[in-house]
Length: 580
Image (tube, rainbow, N blue to C red; front, side):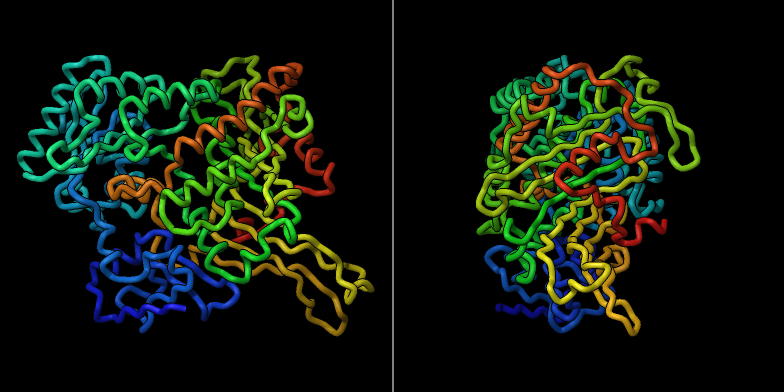
């Protein structure tokens, strides 16, 4: 055990705030023993009141970031300019710009920093800034104040740009080159594609033509490109898109966004598994009965009919979010805590996921589409009544499937995935059920102990819960289920960073750990593509087949009931989700 002690006098108030708010992969803890908390850079004490010991690191090769204060100071990126293509879209206004404002407000952006908002809209700088200010005030995580907002707005410039016009990209390069001369520094050039996927190829081509992919040539500082999902709509289009991207940018320049990987609980899976000796030895097929990864939404498609008709739940959620979560939950322990090593381990795991053959799809996959119903007391229409949706659409809004990982650790452990819209509650959880082998000591009891459960809850309230058996108070020997839980909201005083804050900061820092490698994307599409091929061979689905406000089609319950199991997410109460 190596202990590194950082005394209170070592820190300035600003660095205290920096550590408390941002430092990532932050908490490694023993939830059953509060006195043994292991911290990797996140303060759980009130600001300015540091304890004598800051870090106790026993997995130093895996978690090296806690060793010195010098490492933490590197969190602030070098001078940067982010060019956002699609700067007048919902993603930019609602997610990207409010997240950049929040980073600026908390002092995590460099002094030399600028945003170029590029879009076809014919807006003046002031018109764009006025609109931007309204969205930042509405969507910023911790609200806005006049002083910090005015300071941020001054860093934003709007540029009317047509993706098909070479001259517009020539002028963009000129703007960046002039800024480099003005600042007298070689800054990070980041290009964020917040555009429809159909615009990706032409933007790639223009960036290459005008050598914007090269970045700061004087110091060899390459540009970076950030791409939103969907990365293709099937295996063939994903490969084609990657081929076009690969002609312009190398893999170490590419950041494919999956914002779920930046959720605090998703990141904490690594810490929970590999920094707690009591858990990792039992997370394998010797002790685990099965795993459920569930993402339910009570909302519909929210005016995204045109997109959703092309995507559906399988492409929209399973192919990226849930397969990524599956990989993190079941991958082998990486030798180092860095992007290259962790991404390699995820690829290795995904390669071991059994690819369902088309003739297995009928048995292992359930799809559904919501009809009219009620969410709470509000009546809602069915999917086919949504804007820009075919009245006879066969697009799925619900998918449940059974997968398997064929390696020595997880062979024989079924993994169930479920994703759906217009369901009873918004809930995203990973539940690991352990085997119940029977206890002779309690054979005489009327109610036998239930299997132990370990739950990582990502939404709505982030936290981790463990379901155990305990004796009920009283003179008789009776056992009951009890829950032990760790909840971010009650354990930390600072609000959690939004996923896009963390991702945008990581792009500027050059950390690709939270961004899927192309091999992960292609392997995920191989898994999903076979399901799509299987559906093509089946009769046309009889949609709608579940009521809005329910937990989905009955066939999903039958899928898991065939194995003697049931869906657990809506039965659990991690962080009091049912008391809201």
